[in-house]
Length: 408
Image 1: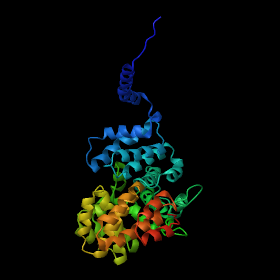
Image 2 (image 1 turned 135 degrees about the vertical axis):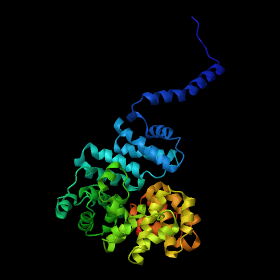
Image 3 (image 1 turned 180 degrees about the vertical axis):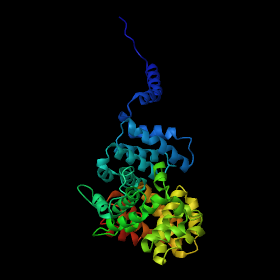
Image 4 (image 1 turned 90 degrees about the vertical axis):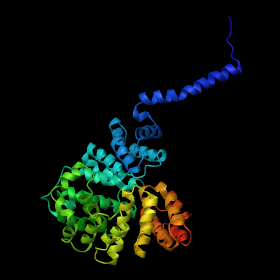
């Protein structure tokens, strides 16, 4: 009986053959493995491959919004969906804005059982996709169920406590503010596009004992009016859209805070308002006073960055074009915080903007903005807060650590 023996050369050749076959084996396994058995990274790579022909940020957003939500139909949980989205952004560095995609994911989750929509709000991730997940949960609950005949007090009772801390949900100030913003979107559905009633509801539900969130609630109402994302949104506002496009006349029916919010959120109907520095300043100049003008500019800068798909050269040119020093400071500062708002993993990007991009005359405003974001938007003594505070120069570094109870 002969015994087969292998020389070292034959052994190495066999090993190399096996190693060479591994990619093909993994590819075949990927084709036949149920999606729920695949790793998040493996799934993300497949999605990136599907969208590889999309080269611009805008095209990438459309491609991922079209394809990624289909994964839920194959059994992926909402939590895993967002893990996959994070992996996609890690692999495809050109994809930044997943706000609308997050809307769609939580909308599909709420659609499974609308009675559990408040649970989905609590489960929605923070620190990524600009709180789009939370907003989607709100909108889906009342997409088809409106209560145009219900009184303000009846609707207030229905929505009471949604954005308040409870059980294991311990939201930051910005989490709660974002929740109230989502509430504003929701109210236009609940009232069947009755803007004045939606405004009255913001007055009723958005003033908690500790904070006044009317601003962000009203932002949501008028954003829903001026920025419809889906066919259902277009249908909702069809009756009032023609009047709303006459922005000056439409906003003039409101006063005070509501008027100022209407002016700011009317930007999609005002040519040049987020495309040119002059148009930007002109829109915010329509508000009632300097404080309102500053608030307008602060909020509108996020729209500028979003619509430019996080194009930093464009943002730099935009800020340099501001004639008003105070507005110019806001432009630089909010550009930096917008990147953190979109995804906490962008903290190094935001720090670099303040330290290396922003002109010396505006650096203080930039660092103050990031310090404020850490205080209002991040858990105390978290790894993200440590990273943000630690990256600041003095005195903001020490102030940031102290105000967030963070040990550096």
